[in-house]
Image (cartoon, rainbow, N blue to C red; front, side, top):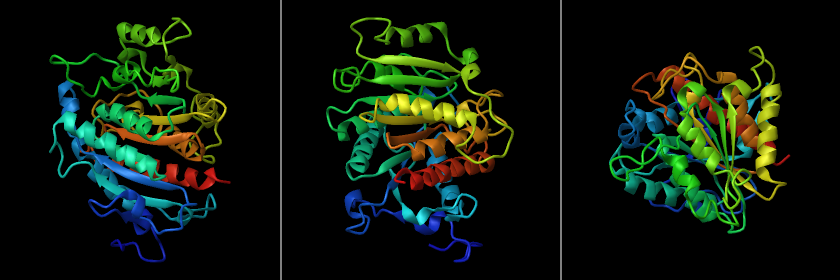
Length: 353
């Protein structure tokens, strides 16, 4: 694909991004005999009905389309600064899970997303799911569990200002604030084979109620014998401060902290990890286009470190990114989203080395 202003002398991610034809199984999209290359499948979740149910600002339903526009333009494919060539991996646009934003009910959208994630993982892809509301994270986790071998332990890291363990609303409806309450109440996640471990990372105390903290701690089997899950909280104050702007990605003390967390979640290499990124974990001056912006939070550099380190780590089998709201602000935040995808892809090129 050729982009206006980007010729063959300056190739971007869009030049190597394969658009999967609608209705074609992902397993047959890439050339036969090329299974050795790591592969990313971008999946769109254009839904913000869950945000509306939670009383949030709508607009994230248009996030996947806007994000993909900037992802296509980001580059370059060969990064001379880091000696990285993205042609050593496969990038596939698996498309949105519905024909138009909010075309399906929340419940039907969750079913479709769960199936698409399971298909991608089963076909050897690492799904990078672009939201959309954060209610996507529970069906994403369910899709991953559907595709993983039954005895594979699973850890989920929620990078977020909020805990998202709220109860259902309106007599039992899921929403953008409930995905991890659903996960922690999931019988398979809490079962003896998955041995679910859940980490809240970069939480902001001003946005997390004491009741929600108590709920999370009640799901920690180290505190409460007989509970099948374990949980950890990492507050924003506990996050290693960002180094001054600059320096090689993935080499900061913050990156080392996140890498250590992934190592712990991988449980000696036998476990799988799902990294869930809510953009409102990033401070509003770096990511103004979110459903619930805050003046506090991670820096853009820390967000890129997270994505790069996650890309390098063999336990990471799924990433989602929630709450990009181009209705609030498109360009700056869209560029950050694209750079996060780019740095994850750069990290993935290093995973097999």
